[in-house]
Image 1: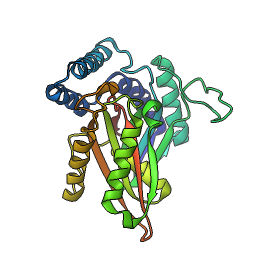
Image 2: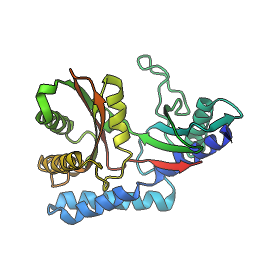
Image 3: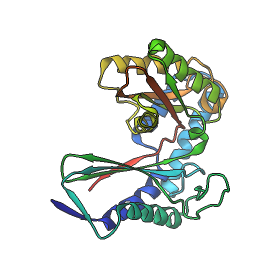
Length: 280
């Protein structure tokens, strides 16, 4: 049994809340560069240029890459041989978010009550997901999620008879109806299977996979490529001004499901799909 003091979790979360808001992941930066080379419209090219310039300025000047510094989504893969000491793990994660968003001068966007609307003032609580895995390590991922794109996400309980055609139609409709609202070019996280609650989480986890890494199942890898091609023919383009780049990537994750259902969720993310991972 390996003991880990929860203060290490707090320190890591604090660090990653700040750094993930100041940089876009390397795979996203690479995808933007490839998109820029493919674009032939002057407006689309200019917008992609500004996006890349913005990313470089954020990194060099240590300021957020976007004014919406997101709701902190924190994923922990906890080895079953780990024993936490020094306090409550949930409290430790939220303390890291509190310190990161306060000390990093990041926008606090969390409301304590969804209807009565009172800001918590420190961007807590985080949305925390924990999974138990073999081993004695903790894999910690911080993914600040802005709500311009989150608000455009969707879930549908499809019938098995609708088949893959129904899945494709639902995904394309979700992206098309979102239009410019999620600040395209977007990354499309797709969950298929499981049940009502698990499929939404699956779609969000799909956004954590690099956009240049395909699903290991050749069937779903081909579906990802097909969907990306179809989405990019919608003509929405960067920031909704038209062009060949509506999406930078489509990532699909799946789970087994019930014989009577075929849940599908789409979690959209803007081009600054921020996330960082550390292993403790």
